[in-house]
Each structure stands twice: as structure tokens, then as C-alpha cells.
Amino acid sequence: MSVDVKKLNAAAEAEAAKRYGELYLKALPGSGGIEKSRLEIATFNCSETMEEFEQVGLGLETVVIFRDESGAGHTGKVLLNLPGQLLLEHGHVNTYVLKKDAPLADGFIKLSELVNGFGGIVKYNSDGTMVCDGNGNPEYLYREADCQIVQARNGIAEYPPERCDDIVETLAGKSETFKAIHGDGVLFADTAQVLHAPPGVDPDTIPEELLPMVGKVRAEQKISTTRMIYMTKGMNVLLPRNTRHAFLGGLDGCVYLEFSTPSMDEADRFTDKRVIR
View 1: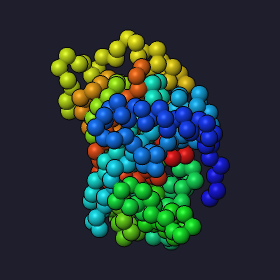
View 2: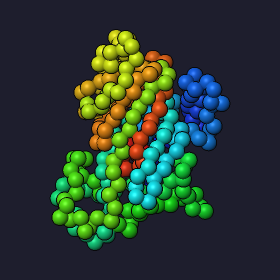
View 3: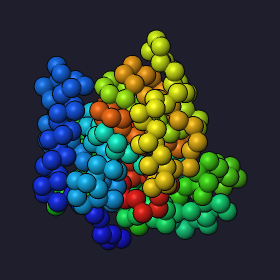
View 4: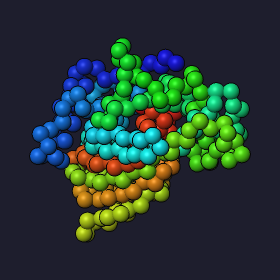
């Protein structure tokens, strides 16, 4: 399926890369910086100008994606939010690959009906880059045209055990841990678990200077979660599978590390249906 995607204009993309590069070096001064080829600038189909991108977007470096034959593995990423920039609310849920001709169980829906431009579950190299053919097109672990790739409508239900013969593979939604290493921000996540907070930091108290930013994104964006967690340098937070979450960068932006089970970004469930990941 062909879908038009909003892309940053050249000037905005260059400015975003520059600002993310500066933010990255502040957080990881001994790293040598981030290579441009390693930086993904995610607009989520929401921006074409820098002004729009400053409101919604994300910079990220995928360090590794590993999945063995059993489906087990891990992912590591560096995530960057500019000041006041929102990573839109989404969740990571179980995805089921079904036989092409299998009848679909009640309460489940094809990802092609949920995710804009969905073509299938892509293959990744260990360094986090997509495996592509000679023409630069992604190669698929499972193509949407060859099977049925589905999720529960509510994101939580398990596929009925009596229909297990229809399942080719179950791809578990990832669980992840965030560790803030620079700046601060607000994590919107009802079922998150705070693993560590630095001395003197109350994760349940949002500083007053960030409250106007929080009010703005709640008024303008689709955020369904009610709990807010203050993230500052040294905070460790666990997001179990199925945890719907969003992240807002603070006054100086925020850089945080993600450690997770295998990543499958193309199957993320965003609350705002316009999003294209």
C-alpha cells in the first residue's frame, strides 16, 4: 500500500540533525558524537518544517537489534527529545502471524488496517539497520501479502488457544527500560515501574516549570494515560509489555537510553491513527 508521508524539508532536516548531534555530545561527551548515517529523524508523519518538528518528533540511534531463531533477543537505542518535543503515545503489543487462509478470531484486526503503510515485519541487521534488497527496498521476515499479521483490537487479548493451529509465529510486544542520562522530561505511562530515582528526586512530582508544556501537549495531542513520571538524569523506569506511553522533553531536552526485548517499530500501536512510523 502506497501512503504519502510528510517529510522534513532539507533545511529543517539539517537543523534537526545539528541540534540532535549537539544534544548527543552533551549526554555522551566521550562517545565521539553520532554519525549522520546512524541518526534516525522520526517525524511520525506530523511535520515538514522545523517549527512543526520541534513539537512532535524523535531522534534516535539504534545501537543493536538482535533476535535469535527462537524469537528471543534484545535491542539497545539512544533516544533524543529536543526541548518541548513529544514522542507520541504508543504501545508495544503482541503480534500474531497467521496462515493466509485462516479465519480471523473475534477481537483481532490486521495491522494493515491499524498501521499506515504497513507492509510486513521487516528484517534487521544486528546494527539496527533494515535489511534491504539491491534496489533499497526492505526485506521482510513476514510480508503482509503472504500471510495475516494481526493484533488484538484492545492491544491486550491473547489469541485464542483453540486457534493455535492457525498461528505461524507469535511476536511478543517488547518490554523496555528507560534510563535518563541528560536533561529531563515527563514520561506519560500508567503502568510504568520506577526502578531507581536519584536522591532527592520525587518521580511523581512534575516541576512547576514543566507544567505549561505538559498542559500544551495534553491539549493538542492524543494522550490517554493519566500518570506522569518526572524523568531526570539517573532515573530508571521499566515499561512492561502493553504499556501505553509518551515522552516529553524538558526545557533543555532529554537524552535517554532504551534497553529492551527485540524491537519491531513497524508494529507499534500509536494512539493517534494518523501516525506513520
